[in-house]
Length: 484
Image 1 (cartoon, helix red, strand yellow):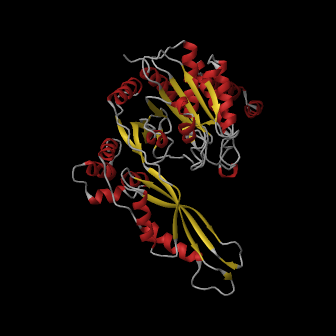
Image 2: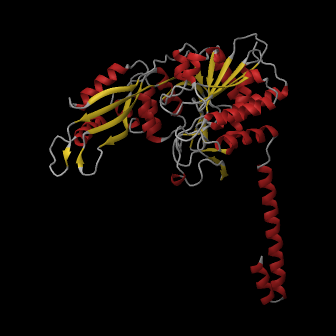
Image 3: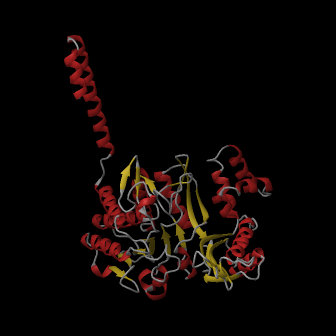
């Protein structure tokens, strides 16, 4: 505005008049823009509550190294008790003071067996220097929420807690108890303090007819368009092993050909070049058939070809070049951590790699270890399983489950296909399936398949997807607990 006033002083009356008109138009433009922007940001009380819980969770560090899920569990427990939940129905429990779990029971009429709603409070590591903003501050900008856990999975934790509070305030009486478990240890690779501990030590707290796991089955966007509402009924099995080479080492001034680092590196190169065989289940074919409608060009044609009765080898090979589709079709093993040597002027006495294996249903740990041992082709590389496979059978996609999901999805997102899928990642659902509890991955927050930032830099979700997921989950809970 100072610039315009300066120009007005220098020019004549006509330019002064024109400048006044311009100023008035600019004022009107910004006034209208600010009004529209403020309308876009107007939230309902339920949305305000959910956003507040989301912000609180993001800003509590729950990483394995320096964080603590107990703090998050206690903060949520206070909100629930303040909203009217009986203290005896809100438990913060675990094997130690650090990294405990929150378990809440919403009392119903008891006409049906309980449902368990599952999420986890812990998140993977995030360094400030790697991010464009502080990962432990909820940042809303450009139509997105940023923060560690914004996609995996504090957004769903906030949605569940907010909806439990909403239903309590509404005086809702479900026809069955609703159990909420927000846990520790999901991201820490086998730490015995979360769902596994609850199953073995406090089973009565979480015992239910079936589980809805919000850490799986994310609805999918493609190119910004909502294209698929999956229900995860199974997931790839996971185990970890180490590959080790040991030798006497020695002074670096007298190197030999028997170098532990080189031997291990050579074995890893062989492993990287090996592909497990392609295996196409009915679930995987159904997924490719549904997704072909969201794709175009060669990828769409390849998906149709793979979904057919006689999958085309060329189409399979082209799809397998894309990491997610490759993971859907085969067992994978990949090196994730390397350790070697202990001095810059000494030959290494130990070289070790940690390998993460993800198995298709039906594959066994023994078969995979045997295969990798053969691929390495070096008897000096010792293969040891450090975190074993948990056998987790698929859950039956029962009519009640799929029909209810279809009903709610049609209400909020008409036309989006609903189908069962296999998850390529692992979740705590494996412990529940292994214990005999059917578990279904049904998140309400859309995931952009072309912008997958889970566990990565600048993790984010769309703001509108968060609020839509809030409403979807609310409708889903009520649909599952008011049926005849």
